[in-house]
Length: 110
Figure (cartoon, rainbow, N blue to C red):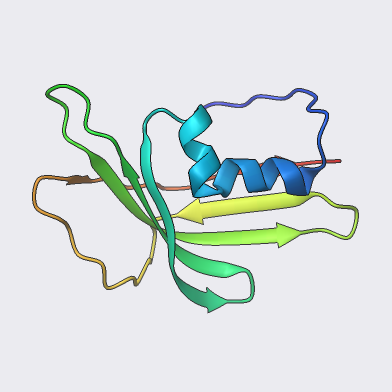
């Protein structure tokens, strides 16, 4: 478990775009190979597929998660994801270890 807090001189929307926009993500997240939204399942709700890069003898990990994003009227962005009850239809892939995320997310405040 980890918690961090600190100032960033950008709007929450710009920070969120950097965190989740796949071409930019490779510039700061050296372990990420894929972040894709596979299916829209409701208002601001998606099924997300995340895959890490294979490192040396450690095989890639992938995660299939319920992914919920909400932007509050004041500009605060909340993101929550979990593998619990994720009905994605995306089965395990041979040679990749399927990870499980109990609950994860972040809050970006203006």
